[in-house]
Image (tube, helix red, strand yellow):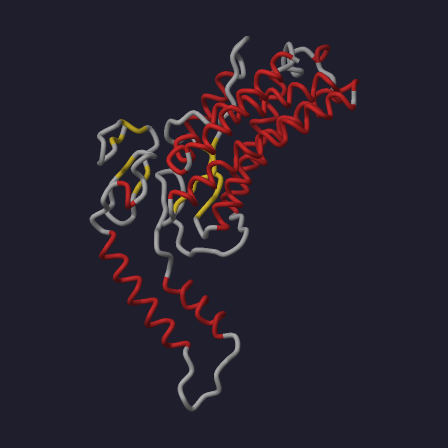
Length: 294
């Protein structure tokens, strides 16, 4: 098991800094968090390449000035490369900073695997796996439950991605082998379940505010969906049990992610704004308790 080069903590899935080629924990993965020795050299090289590339796009005094010069500069910046290279030991390096929403083939594959685990998780909530005992299986109930689990999990991760990409950061979902295995293992336990197959990996140079807002987007999404499910539970009495279960799960996910311990969302939100952290934490606890009691 690797150790963080900054704090010495043992990390099962460390982050590799492409600047100094050392491994770090989630708290010290960014260059500014571990006083990266290679930061200045890479910034200097990238700045020089960017200037050369952009200069090549600027028209001479004999040529007419182009109206789409901004697009030419953007293309030159992409050729010069990003200001921060992101890589994990189980992921792939990020080589070009993309603007707007983008899903790589690797990310889509990881999302599909996570959704497959979610379907198994839904099956495990029945008294027995339908493959073993079909008498306990009801297709309609399974589909409704899977959909509720789906909208409790996926929007949380996609909102992280959307806000991160809005700030120009790298953001892609990745399965985490250790947690995916733990999820599979708990499917067979009678009273205890864990669903944490992966998370959106975020990297790049940004302010604490940008990282805080990106982190807060996930729990806030759970709270909005959870409140909506509470309302739907009263509107559709036949589906009350499913909707109240969804509200409970959304409250639990929001509360769990707001724990102020890295790499959970709460640590980043607390670093950015204590007021927002307290508001989200209290709201998530309230939703969790209401869903539990109902």
